[in-house]
Length: 248
Ligand code: PGA
Image 1 (cartoon, rainbow, N blue to C red):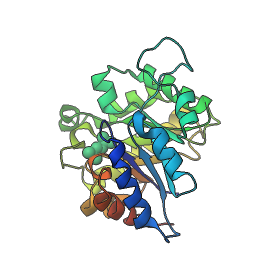
Image 2: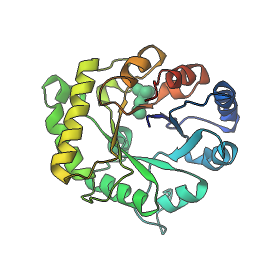
Image 3: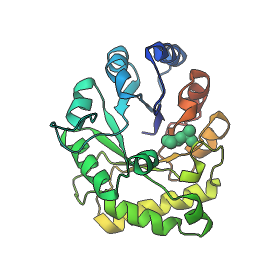
């Protein structure tokens, strides 16, 4: 099943419940929907999870601490996210890697924590502008994948989000052929590195997904969904993105 995920980042107040109402109204009566996920800021997680219980929209966290609890001021554990009603947790988003100096090793520990509580990690990888320009995309991705994915063969719930940093929030995207090639590379790399590990592996594309390009990206070979930032904040953008998902 394809996944259309919205990452609200550090956006949203209690009044943003209105967006959720609009999404529910827009989806009402539709049966052939992809998996839909909203990752709001932690302050809205419980509110949204209660509101969305029993609806087609899931909620997720944007990061987590590897430990279950303890003296880590300001952090949130995977246990807490599960308790709040999350089904997925984004880990290793490039903004976390930059703003909070998160390393591949830290991202791996977070993804292990997410699996510890039975939720699905969405592990983000992607090259920056200069690596892209230098043709280093695959080398960068190999390092990130090797470093941030746990070597366990029983994994079923793994999701990788390919998010070129230069495409995030910029309006620029790789060509469809580049997305297809890179997703193919990630799938092969994970298979080679971890054996038959990625049976249920899904690979999302993220970076400037919007209503005008969503359909083509979502239906490209090897694309199992999208991770949407800015365009997930407004129902008038997010609903057409969801509608661009052709179900198998
Ligand atoms: P964007 O962000 O859709 O605003 O480019 C994507 C992301 O960071 O996940």
